[in-house]
Image 1: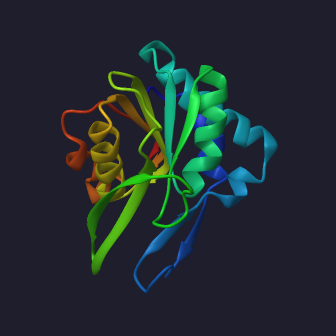
Image 2: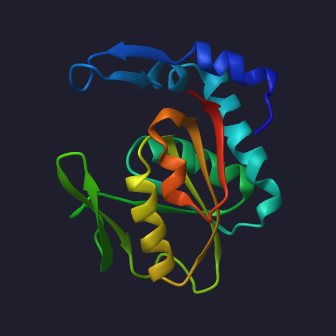
Length: 177
């Protein structure tokens, strides 16, 4: 994504929290950005503008901060919204994908009837770090027969190379560290 003048203001609204969730990690906290109505609007606008030409009919958003941005992006794109959640949170029949974490595994779920075969979707999340969550979401979308038009993230932690796990997909990010 080209450097839009709005991006600098968004970066200033993100705070670094050292040693969270564990020592040695500097967490990029987007909650100040979410709390600022102008910055929240700009973030959603930038994410949607990058995906306007993709012709998506659904936005698939990843729990939990991805829901905040994903619903706003879906509204701007006039697309439906589909949540991908942790196990046991969706009320109807689901598909699941398990993925590796640094220590252990985690699982995501999507409703079996959430997408239509051949449908073009945009996957949205707040941050891409190592890419495991995004890759698991891709597996769920593709199990349902839908096509991923692109992934879009508010923040990309490039030094963790999460984009590499999404090789073959278009990856859009507003802010890169």
